[in-house]
Length: 566
Ligand SMILES: Nc1ncnc2c1ncn2[C@@H]1O[C@H](COP(=O)(O)OP(=O)(O)OP(=O)(O)O)[C@@H](O)[C@H]1O
Ligand SMILES: CCCCCCCCCCCCC/C=C/[C@@H](O)[C@H](CO)NC(=O)CCCCC
Ligand SMILES: [Ca+2]
Image 1 (tube, rainbow, N blue to C red):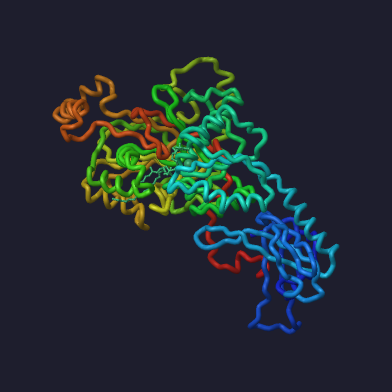
Image 2: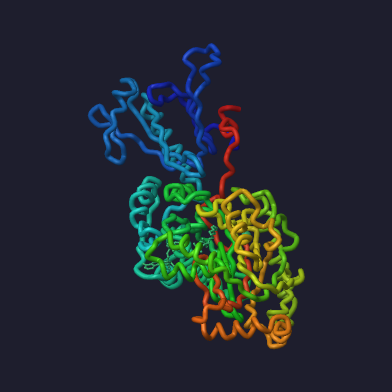
């Protein structure tokens, strides 16, 4: 809760023909209705509003012309007639107003007063306060995917977002993409990033993935880091990314803001919010494949994605269709998962606490992570012995690798909750946005009925991990090896265990038309299909930053949020 602090300005102004005491401090703008009579009236509480200065979008002078007033935007407004002849000067403050379900709207209040100098003093003081806020972006590079989701990206940006940016005095360079990977390659090679305070992505999770691939790559090249190496500590990106949701799932926007609403996202960008985010790098045999910030899913979610890609014409409904189809198909896959448990951190995947705005767990674990990497860099500098990467003895591997072999319906790694409208609490409800870990969820082979119980729990209050065939681990790094990529000695052992199945899977791999279960699934990496199944995944703590603040805790009692009530 913000306290007013030292007042910069205090005046009696009018709002809709009523007298208000209006005050401005560095942190708050407050307007409190003056009591008509000094006698205490229990049934008429004084009306008081306050807005954090950090949530003021802009201030606008209302210009006078022929006895009526004109807005900066040209629309006529008869304030003088409405508010009494003595009120001649007016200014309007646009600010963030919270609505239901984490949505933000742009609200406005017009103050009038008889003294022009007072009015101008108010306008310039508020503008000074806004200008002194260095976290607000002034120049943005905007990429629009015109084909994401329901093909509404361009319309959404032009109608809902651009007018707000103009009001907030933000200049933009807009690129409407012409082909897949246009935005990624532009960021990698062409964009003059020094000119901008941030990048805006208008599209879905796939488009966001393009943006982070371009930005992370470019940052590493500019900092002299090899982006291909699985062992390098990657340099964090300084430019923040704003997401205007215009895709099919928009899980990254939903899990970092709490809603998929373009106006809310635009307002988070304008006020200059900042939310760090973990990024997983995915390698195959030391070869870089992709980055992931939300879901890495093998088995069920990999199959849903592969099937749904062929049905893009269906739009967002393709996921529901393929989801039901893959649930009925009920394929399981064999392989070995090894992982490094996240040690020394606060939090587990079964916690009741959730990652919310200003999350202390992310702050604590982020700090721990940077201290560890500093120590590691110092140790590295004083130790010239080279070590094979798979035996690598970095601080993160000082905990032991653990290995699990089995038959899995799904292997999911959720670096954030992956909440989305389909599953408002997400795949891993207690996962954190910026704690340097991912939640590794293993769903072993079970009956269709049991798998349905697990899936349906993603949409209810029940715990999807409280089932005997599901286990979840918070990890810093993991590897997966499908069974048929394993070493010969492993295969020999397996042959004794299950020789029949081994033979049939080999046959079926070569002859998929025979109808037997396939031996391999594919990885769903934030909605993109990976071409390799054997992967090595490492979490990079807080590698990127978004124009977001995490999901805000909803107030229990409205009055507690109102400093006027204290
Ligand atoms: N101009 C373009 N033409 C064709 N494809 C594009 C273009 N611009 C971007 N893309 C690609 O479109 C794919 C899907 O885009 P996007 O993520 O915006 O929507 P979506 O797949 O419907 O949503 P979600 O990822 O949230 O499920 C991305 O992988 C992106 O690389
Ligand atoms: C039999 C039906 C049971 C219904 C169970 C519903 C469970 C829903 C869980 C949804 C989890 C979404 C995870 C997000 C993944 C995104 O990175 C990715 C890219 O946008 N989306 C998908 O892969 C799209 C994946 C869509 C899966 C349905
Ligand atoms: Ca995380």
